[in-house]
Image (tube, rainbow, N blue to C red; front, side):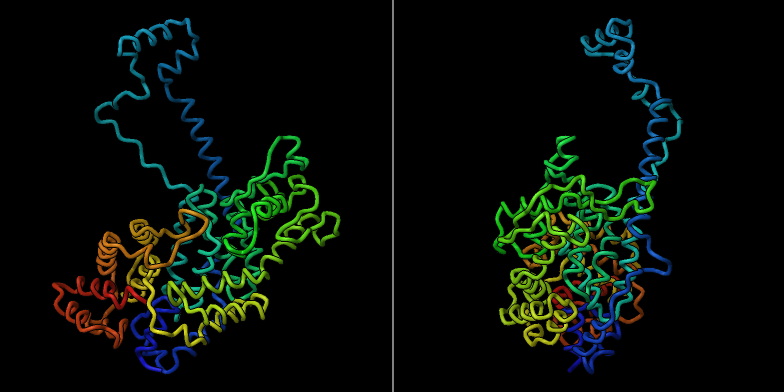
Length: 502
């Protein structure tokens, strides 16, 4: 192997080279990747224990309750607006008559609450961020550290791939926002080199996913609770389980299968009673479960079968069958090959990944090893880096001191905020999504900001060799050499075509 191949390996399969990384693995780039793949990524990100979903759920609920109490207290002490006072006093009161007459004349009574502040009166202090927002920022801080410190970064890339595959939408509400990081730590990291079925189950059961896809509020119409309260099904989670998480849109399921799976998943929720020790944990609630046999993709799942965990076993049986379905193997193999190799991945590579997934019954470590050992994966095809890949690679290359707020702002501008896709499909990773003139302008601005935070102690010309290697073109070398400042030179390194394409 060569230095050029080492740089290529770090860009294609890892998080991007830091100065010294390519030299370190130049003797055997593929072996270095495989060696890192043999070590599971850390579950705990940071010097102290990460809060679990139970602790996060309790903290957010306590914060919500405290804010509700503060709002109630504030409302009780604020003077009523004229309309509110009129309503409280009754339609025939002098206040009501004066308010109505004023409104008819286009004037009305000035509301005490909306009057201009007295001169010199201090403005109200900016409200403190919610606990959910603080947790979200803390989780991103942990993710930044994990990405910065990773060796080749191949396992971290897999974590990010699977977290996007099982995408939760943190913008849905503040509970999902606060739980998004714990979802990645609890449902993705422990299984990223394990069995797909275990990851599928953990992701399906996690409160972040149950809330993001509305299964926590799905009720069987003929269940005890459904009959009593007139509640019904929500099919979101069932649909995405098949369309996105397992067999894929062409996997052979029908709308009837979606409805049946939604019925199977009724009762899959989590404990919301803060007084219970299991608050925030997954729970199967039989009172919400739709009774009866269910038929999903040609197989009947009987209600009267004695499952190990009661009627929850219907769902476990369906998930097992979906996880081991040949369509799932093909769907996941294609997505992995597209993510790492090319927007239109080589069919032999997809076939090989599919065969490994099938023969190992979803062993994700074996699938990853097959990817790294396949010659097609090392072919000189190109992938355009997504905003998250670009910012992480730039941070590593420049040893940039990037904190969570700065990264959040940058990714917000670039259109790929962490754990916040616009749909359950997750973020696309193809060139058509991210390569546009205005997007490149935004990347240049981000590159300049990162260059300002750079701590790398190499001259720009040496940084070109360290992170771009022999593949750096004459044009790139010349542009960096002619830069008006070191900051501009560093920004040009990470904005070079050799850096943006992997």
